[in-house]
Length: 540
Image (cartoon, rainbow, N blue to C red; front, side, top):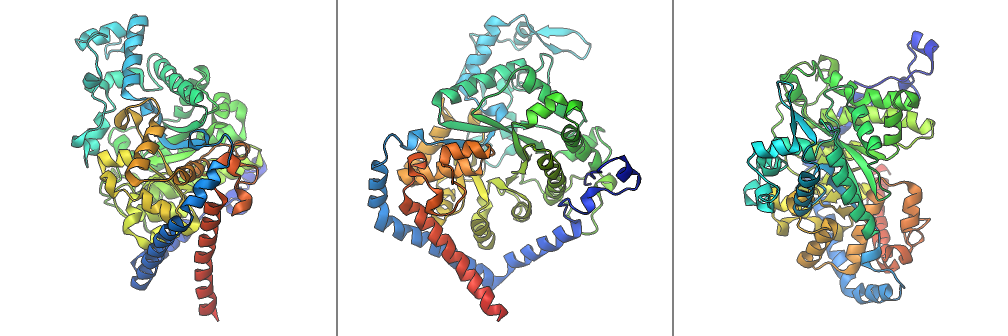
């Protein structure tokens, strides 16, 4: 299940692959042992009580800090020239490219395309005959004039709550999968040209706003070996690029669907289709020139699907290896995450050795479903998207705080799918000092304005009465969590942003007063010293 890297042909002949010595691959047994340890910690009664009390203490401590220092923080911000919440950099850390535009934008784009490109051949029938855009609309009994936002029917409503199947159908404009295929897919008859055009319009809006950035997610399914090359060619050929945008590649957990349709024979084929082109492009960039260029702007991989679907198989020492996983059952979440991380660790070592950018694992996790997803992601991920279920597991929530694992939260998305806005734990996480950021998830389904990220911030600020300092802290967190290059982050946050405490803060760029930074740093040190003193006392 894990790729092997050989130095040369001689090493290959001797079967001396580097992944056994200097490359940081993690043995399955080691992963499972650590995972079981975490399961035991989560279930431990006294530890649950300890973590619950520490988290409650962190909340109360922040309330006290606010009462004592809110006016000082506000005065400190007012002394900073030019900088305010509107012109600090903020990154939309979790947004899907296929739904990054709002519904009105998509409507305008479809109408404009109908008027200007009605004769474009956009679809092929099963008998091989071609259909133009005008013919597609005729077959649907639609004209450009007829179309309205209500007719598009892409917005989530009260009927999508706990109905992921209904939510997925909202990706189809007018309920037609053909329109989705034509307008918001990269691999179609027109080479994804319309999707590239609307993405470039959204990127242009981002560039106009100057201070808003985004990390759009594009899909690689693992059904065939040429998916990466097709996606990279689409991006390069259509010049889908912006300084304000980085890409994340989402890999849907749909092995069971591909197996049922006889697209693959075992799970190893899925892994090969995902990782083999990446290793080839890294080892020999000329073998995949477009992919080599595209990967320079990819910051990581994501794992997506409906987490609430039941898992009928567990990942343990007796679980089949990917080559032997030939059953129709979908592997569990931990299985996907483990093999993605193991391959990425070796790939990153290879890329770093060649002076290339590396990729991080940033999966969807903790929106619904079992708690063990959060355990797997805690062990393997750089940061996660959603993390709602941490509110139910004090031990894990405290661990996420201590490890400062980023959580990209989307309260408007959750409000339509899994959790009412007022019950969302984002404000609580922020108060306690977890590394959280605000993100939009799917503006097409959840937002109304041209600036969905600002819409997300404005609603959060009103509902939870967030101060300007709180919002600037969320914005800084989003930049820290993001996959933008280190030098870019230095420009946005200051040259020493990686340092802890006041030396790492530059208020003229972040608009966060040193008082808040000091509070966060000292609180974090207090928590660590509490634990280390206990460990020290125990060992003595």
